[in-house]
Length: 205
Length: 205
DNA sequence: GGGCAAAGCTAATGCCATTAGCATTTTCCC
DNA sequence: GGGAAAATGCTAATGGCATTAGCTTTGCCC
Image (cartoon, rainbow over the protein chains, first blue to last red):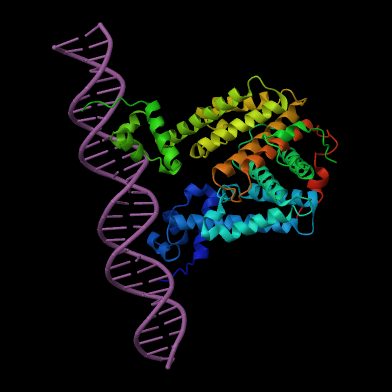
């Protein structure tokens, strides 16, 4: 038997091609093995289980998104950096919708993903540096940004926006919405949720 | 054999309890059957397949969210209505995180979900009535709102926010971010909104 | 009380993940 | 170069699950 010369990286790569073609649910060890030209149990030499393979796929996606986001942000600051980050993020999800669908949402819960999750969060916070945000405000701001991009992009990648209106235009308005909220200082801690809704009329410039 | 007296509704209800306890992946026909006190193949009298059961679960969640959102909005308008809608939406997701995880993202694609999806979208648009939005602007606004709530809430329900800062406060700022963007008229026609920040620099490739 | 549809059951099939144990290849050390 | 040791692959077997086929029983309607 000529040995195939598999490796964990090769297994993940094969699985990734299955993700791209048919989404996560099409990733079975049987399918990966067939595509790799190997019997199913042979995969266990490179991967502990189907579950681990899935986590490795999530890691790959997280790293890809982080790399693109980090690169997009370099040499920019303020609104420009935020926009570049969000655009790069969206570009990835549109280019690889099935990959984006397995973007891990809570990487800190998995030791395998934790470090990459830190790096990802680092990029988000780095982009906020130019705004004058206190520690807690920066956290709220990063969460807003993440919620907005992830929300838009996950819906879009899943085909969730049915109407014909231009999605580029919507996303541009999402970017504006986020950057405006970063420029607008929040009223510190005065009770009711949405209390700031009262203070209207900050026009973004 | 005393007949159990199952029905599609009862099967869905049983499956829903499994969702609450262990997430969607714990919903197997075998588990539902066991909990219902019936042999697995008996379920096929009430449900066409596991796939259909999953879609019925998604329908249920979509309807529950829509009901709560619709009720929250009644008798309110403007920022107040938007805040109430978003808060009710979040309240549902926090009360039933595993249910929210199966909230259908593209209901229009499934005949079973399409009508409920329309109703859901109807609530979103109804809430925007008080703002002076053109047709296209209303679509962009509804998408922003949906992206922001869904993004925040899906991340939160999945445990995606690891830092200790108060999530109620973050969500309040998300509401402010959205309402502010609704109050701020977008510059019409002369280039897309955010064209300056968003489009000025695209990262290579 | 007889018949009929609905609701349930058992048996069987096939796919999948996973484990155990065996064969073969590669590596690496001398 | 040669041989042990580790790494890589294989076949066989197990058990869970969804699904189908075909049979039995129940409940109801007249």
